[in-house]
Image (cartoon, rainbow, N blue to C red; front, side, top):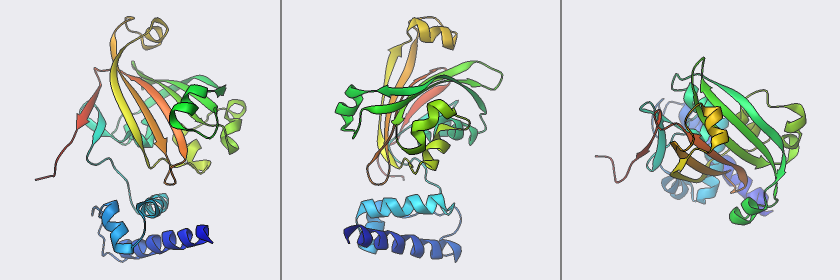
Length: 238
C-alpha cells in the first residue's frame, strides 16, 4: 500500500507538470522551481519530486542541468558529467572516441563498505577517451551494479555509451557526490595518455545514485588539466 501511495503522488506531480509544459504555461527554456518549492506546492517529499523529474526527463519534457555547486568544464565549456562523458562532451560539440580497456565482473569490498552498497559484486568498465583523431584526454574507471542486463555486459560487450546501458537497465543517475584532487599519473596510465609519468592530472571520483537513492555508478577519472577545469558557483545569482 505504501508503494502504491508513493506511485500515485509521483504520477500526480508528473501529469500536472506535463500538462503545464504541453499547454504552454511553462514555456521552452523556463527554469522549473527547485525541489523544495515543488515539494511544498504538491505537498510531497523531495524524493517524490526527484522521481517525477526523472520521469519528465525520460519523456523528453525537461532537461536537467548542473546548477549551483561544482561542475567540470572542457576548454571553458560547461559539461554536465552526470550524463556521462560521451554525451556531455558531444552536447558541447566535442566528439570523442572511446577504447574499452577492461570489461569484467569484479568484487569491490572496500567500495561496498565505504558507500554501504548492497553487494560488492560490480561490473568494471575502464575506458580511454580521446578527441576524434586526436590526443587522449581521460581515463575513466567505472564500477556499476552487476544486476539485470548489466551483469551480461562482459560477455555481450559495450556497444554504445555506458549511460545508455545504465538507462536501459532502469538506472538513471539523479543525485550523488563528486570529489576532485590533483594526482600524479602512474607509469601504466602515462603510457595510455601519452604523457610523462608523474605528470599532474585532475582526478575526480563521482558516486551516482538514482531518485530512490540506489547505487548507479562509481567512476574515477583522470582528466587532462590542459583541457578540463573545475568551476565553482556560490551564493545567489544577482
